[in-house]
Length: 587
Image 1 (cartoon, helix red, strand yellow):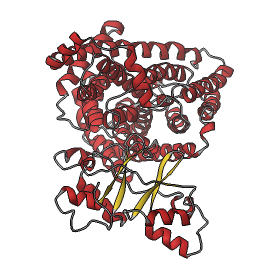
Image 2 (cartoon, one colour; image 1 turned 30 degrees about the vertical axis):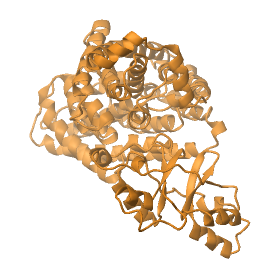
Image 3 (cartoon, helix red, strand yellow; image 1 turned 135 degrees about the horizontal axis):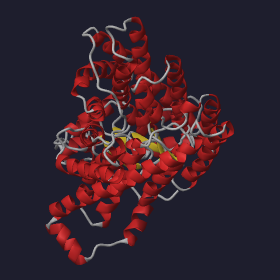
Image 4 (cartoon, helix red, strand yellow; image 1 turned 180 degrees about the vertical axis):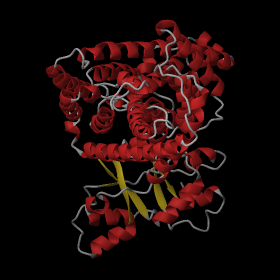
């Protein structure tokens, strides 16, 4: 795999702005940024349209109504196997959804998304979805849109901060074209990607979303994603049923999230050399299910449309709800390229249709048909899984263009969001990023922007122990150090931190010849990130009982950037002289 630094260096050779252009950007960066925003909206809109056309046109070849059974079995297997090899060999950053990677680019990688990743995400996801793997195209569209924005910003010589600001701009443009919902796209970019509804980039996000939506309308027309009948509230008693739908939607969201995360964690534990064929495991499972129940293949928006219009039997909705849940979980966890937006809407529609169908069969004069509940169920599952409740409400409103659906949707979404937040406190995208070694900042850490930061007290890590060292050798090196704890590294990078006291105890217990692996194996080590506040640093030192903590990259938890010692923090506040270790003269 080419390192990120090498990719940045190589891309810098392709296009270097002239001195005249650089001067223009320097003095009129705001105006250039505005023009780039318009260009991003147009380019991302055209790219997402191509994405939609490719996946739908080729996906139709395994449609249940025309494709023979053998094709439904083998195409998902062959597609996932071939794409798994390409993802492993050439496009390692193009796996999965794309939303966690987009947030990582914004918060941990300085707005950098490589051209290689954009191309890999587009073509590998297109081929994966066209082969019948039941994942979504909207999440990958977000990464592709953000990548186009990142590449343009860098090629045009914008400042690093402006390049970072273009990430949510590209993400909003992608969602606007993928869902045909420009307002929901703005909310998603601010609510989920940036995490701040009052972000300064709001104007540019709105402009890019509108431009991308206009491009979609120009190329594909203004048809909504789903055509649904006019919504009607038959009786006020239905609000109780919508609350029950919210409760069940929250439980479904928790089950989906926990199952996906646990299964993905197991796949990540497998040897790295198996990564190229891991996606085929999902392909085999999907192929077998598709042989018997072809409706689970692909994104399945056509079947969602059937449910919304009351054209699907209750038993089939229940069957698709269960099978689609497992098909999506194993497809995503095994490493296929695709998102969870579409699957969330599919599962929500089947759940809502099931609840509505049962309620309508018992109380036909007081309950609307199943289609109304399927519509609300889509937003309910989206709010519980993706954790973007405002985006969910506005998205369903834009899809239906019917204001009457808002109140039931808000009730169901609120209950679902509450249940999922309580039973699964960490949002799915944050945990997915964490599993990849990317530590995204929390909302609290982003708010405390005025505090002093870890990087202000950080020193280079010049003393590092290796896991192959014996306890005796490590103990002698630690005794000669001015620090009470030293980081330990392996072939991946930093793997833990050990204290002098722990080493001396191991030697005293007769483990002098044992390696440091025994002290750090299977443990998550305490650490800091350079953009965190010193308050967090002191809290973590106290919780860990350590005077020093390693500082690691948000993009790679094993990449050691330095260390922070207690005396360094206190020295920054003018209290160094009282607590210097013997022989230590400061950073």
